[in-house]
Image 1 (cartoon, rainbow, N blue to C red):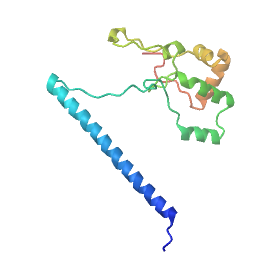
Image 2 (cartoon, rainbow, N blue to C red):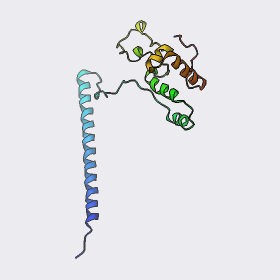
Image 3 (tube, helix red, strand yellow):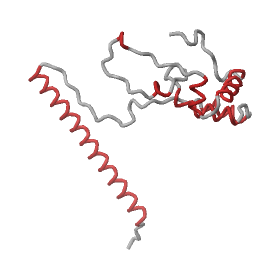
Image 4 (cartoon, one colour):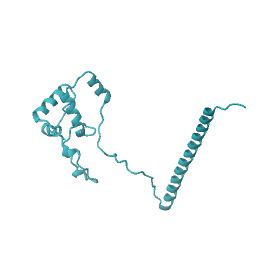
Amino acid sequence: MKKRNFRIDFTEAEQKARLRDFEKDSETRFKAEELKKSLLEQLKELTGEDHFVGTSKDPFAGEPFNQTMHRNLDLLNRISYLTQAEESFLFKIQAYLEFKSNVIICREDKFKKKRKNVIEDDFELPKAATVSDIAEIIGKSRQQTSLIMNSLKEKEILLNPEGAGQV
């Protein structure tokens, strides 16, 4: 009588079961897509309008965010380019950077709920933060904040854009 290697048999059986599960899942997904397509086509025939299937909204969709350039930050860390005060400033101020422009925005404008269906004439640009506003945001005096910001400007981490303060 020939001895069987149960480990090999078990591995083969497991692989076959996984393959069957994969084929079953693929079939189910295909049938669901076909059903959606068929229902949408029927709806179009009835109404003459195109309809689409949507999914529920991601709870984080539309939440303000900004990105950090990790390689740049890594280099600054490795060469100890920033003081602890400068690092703290940059960390605390991130939440107030305006998307695309990176302008530091006042706290009340940054987290103000945006109205839907805003008429163009009624549109209000967010207010750029002053040094006093920034001092309040980071919990430092105006003088300390000004010193940190000037240091970051000298290092070309912070910039005053052309036409700053103008719309």
